[in-house]
Amino acid sequence: MSDMNPWLIARNLLAVRLDNAGDVVMVGPALRAIKTAAPECQITLLASPAGAKAASLLPWVDSVLVWRSIWQDLGQLPFDPAREKDLIQLIADRSFNGAVIFSSFSQTPHVAAYACYLAGIPLRAGESKEFGGGTLSTELRGTPDETHQVDRNLRLVQAVGFTDVDPALEIAIPEASHEVVSRRLWDAGIAPGQPLVMLHPGASAEARRYPSERFAQVAELLRAQGWRVVVTGSERERELLESATGGNDAIPVFADFSIQEYAALIARAAVVVCNNTLPLHLADATRTPVVALYSGTELISQWGPRFTPSRVLQRITACTPCYRFSCPIGLPCLDFDPEEVVAALSELAPLRPAAGEPRMVVA
View 1 (cartoon, rainbow, N blue to C red):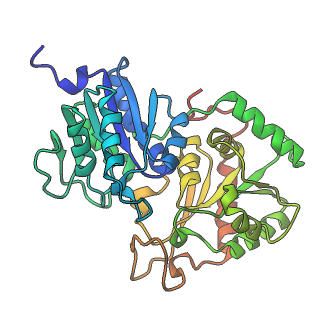
View 2: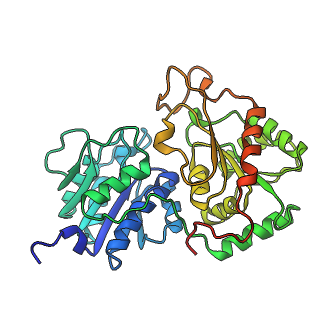
View 3: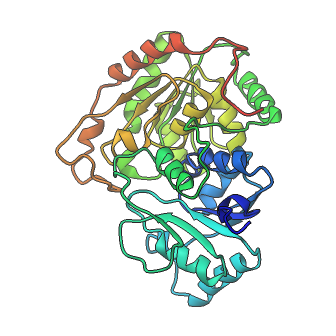
């Protein structure tokens, strides 16, 4: 037994991903690899409040711990060392055998690893560029920055012994969520099977948002071609969403769906048009064709769609990739006409799977 890989016999693992919901969706293949090798292993996800919402889409997650981490903070958390000690106790109370710390190319795993060390977790794996002493028991290095986030996550779990990997994104959508979406669309005058385009103008960073007034032009061009169009987002984005409709009351706005219902709407759509944000990854998981309005904040290779028919629109500029939250020069990377967006969508529409065709979604 002493020669056994301790990761493969661990039965209580902590998966750390403290970013947004889309980042959590992209951890799915890595968690699936763990469950494939160790079906009895219980996986707890440590996630941010935003990221935790996506946990319900991943059937490999058994429980969730929600935390706003100081090392991912943008200056909004107050100075409160006692709060951070509470995190260590929260983790320690669960008696985890190991922690897999998922991060992007620009993030350090060492702060999270140190918290896990103090919480008594003996196995701690992460991808690192900098020296962190003994905070990690397994430290992976050398992954190129341009690597897709899904592959970065998979490379980490492979390094500790979970080698049966598959990069395909996959999510679980309850049947009740499909029923809610069908009912809401019917109430909006959209019949089952009627071709539908979903527009999502939001993104967590301003630098990744195609201008809402151009989204409104896209909507009108699509309506002129006979498409039914809906606009989606969150209630706090209400002004942005209304702007993307161009003030047209005939375009339904959905801002109150749960994440499962939102995924069901994406699965129902003929094509999704969105920025580099959550719906791009959900469309990739549901195999719904997607037109990605992909700003120059990141490389397409890092977060772009790979498994569904897609068209990625981006103007390459001298500042690409900038990794900024806001753009000081007017978003030249997203400077394409609405007609280009509609043309890309028209290329994709015939590639939508027929009704009833098997989808790459967990039942």
